[in-house]
Image (cartoon, rainbow, N blue to C red; front, side):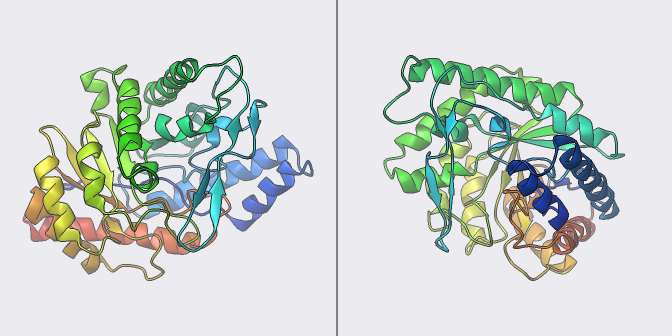
Length: 354
């Protein structure tokens, strides 16, 4: 396609898989039994993804417990009482807390990618969690015998290994999920936390060559879970200058649900650096209504007025089910929205004479 278009990541899991995941956690289903259902979900997700016409696809994160916690499954040095992330509708998600060092990933995304490659005929994108999100595992009062500096050194190595493994396994590109960026401004209006997050991600990116970083991108949104967000009330302008300091080639920016898109696009236009491309969100996973191809085309044309077409792409605002148990959006609706993104992007390109 003359204007590139990509998904963000997750697709709602089948009800049977959600129930099987709970049964496995309760010791009522074997790992083999869960694995068979995960394989079926991955196969079906990739088939339906390819039927939408999307030139780049994902596995829908069917085997991930969540976009944020997949590296932690099976680790024994964690307690459940970590940082709490409140959402606007009153529900919350909670991260675990590190209790001992060293910190290592129990699972790397390469395993998901290799499973998906058995079924895919189109390029596969792979999402990874940011080092900054996982830095929140370290408690404020420290970990006995394991300094914060030692934790960060281990975290950076593991984050690099996660990205590099995906690239080496044949990922079309790798997307770092940085949904805590906007949230950090809410937690710390001085933006020192945001600055620390950006520096930490860049310390991971510094381990990759300029050519490798062309295949790495960063996704930002105000969080999306159970049709609610955790930081949509934070002015996007507070995040964007720091965001575009990240040393990546691609940015995936939530925009369809933004109340004043022209204002945000004008800010992005001023911040975008040579060699960088912005994939603007043109479908809103939280909005129950499925966008028409004309809706999407209008949003693409609007973005093109500010960014031009040479550094423009399109995406969904967010994943459709970043946490594995989120059923607020149906699988059918998710794929209908993806098809609208693809068809609407193509329609916009035609109207632009591309």
